[in-house]
Length: 116
Image 1 (cartoon, rainbow, N blue to C red):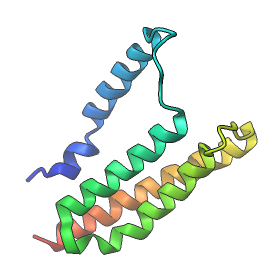
Image 2 (image 1 turned 90 degrees about the horizontal axis):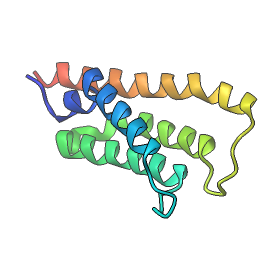
Image 3 (image 1 turned 90 degrees about the vertical axis):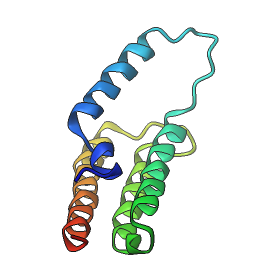
């Protein structure tokens, strides 16, 4: 049974969103005010957190530390100051962020299996 989290992590849906985002970014007029990357990244993490809490309610506690780790890494990759981290720092953060997102997914799958 597919729940909201399955839809959130669906690879086809994510690819479509990324393709639309890339197309939209190519046609954004100069005068349009865009949110800084930091705000968008933090917004995505908070959307993930809200979705998990809405879907799992009181059972969301085990996944919170993994989401906190994702948030910490996103804040390092997209600092509020707007400064872009050095390429070396970003190269270190990318695999850490992937691992943290994998951990979120693994914990969610474990909770889904336990809830059956």
